[in-house]
Image (cartoon, rainbow over all chains, first blue to last red; front, side, top):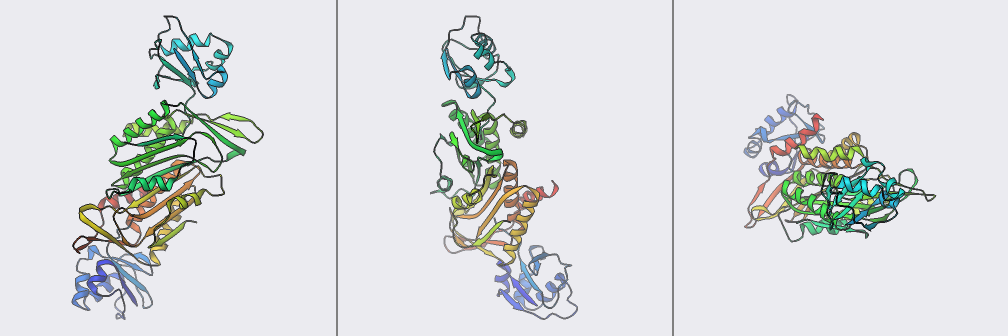
Length: 83
Length: 83
Length: 150
Length: 150
């Protein structure tokens, strides 16, 4: 599974992208966040306030109950501020 | 008094501008229209449908009860169609 | 103080837009509307007439109302007169503001009011030489009227 | 089919507008919004980040929604990324239609939705080297939400 980070989530995690292989009980975006947050203090800091974290699965916005699978591209980022 | 005509009112009257000296009992825009309409068949045709005629006195939109005086510039035209 | 022009010549929309932001850093957005001559029903040309003097003053007043109602940093209205071919621009409204909502609303207000309150008259010329004065449209009146209530 | 570009380079608003009317006579108006980088509070630059691939697709979908909702003859969205200085353009939305109301409304819809649904993130750089990520604004959410009810 490919995980991407943008904006301050990227800065806090310390990388723009990582390949991960979460266990089988990580089935959705919310589960993936909990599993990633336990990987390192940097990950924990990035996911500390879940209200400030948005996600996309395979480049579509996704809510915490959205399923994730081994070949997905999952991205985490703050609320968008374009325009 | 200087009277101006625009758009199809100009075409119907046959002139863009004329100097007129209406009698003293012509006191407002409505009275001026009635007096002008009696000047010639062309004028009568131009003012035949009062609902299609708009007026300005000294370059401000004016209703039929707006006063007119000897040195005024009075203009008649159809509803505007700019933009 | 709005920039108001009534002219036969074409105008340069890019240059007019750039002029509203040049040398300043308080503009967050420029909204604009460019009115273009459509070629419906075999139209050969549109001929626009105006009331020199009154037209410029009427536009300036409408722009003053927009500037009083929205916090604009700049406002430009250019309206062409004379003979205009299908596909050619007729009118340009530009409104600049720190915030986009003010610019967008003021731009819509200005074009709605120009349609109903500025002394211009359009005559359509068709292939074959016939012509017809454009009649005022009730829906333009309705569009302008919605700004009176708010 | 909208023209959607995400790029570092500046764009030519006049040329983009002309492209929406070139060679056709069914366009009655082109509405546009140009978003510009303000220089509030000693801002030195704005750095815009995006999600390559997803951002272009998200904008294309928003444009498709606009084209489904209003009878547009053309639609262009150009959003810059990278380092942008105060006074420089960030985003351009252009909507063309036979009728002005459709163009004006679709333009406002697009910029409201871009602000809340397109994956861009802004970081402010200040004189002295400090920087700060721009936070999403509740009023942008409210502006976008008004299009959902209608």
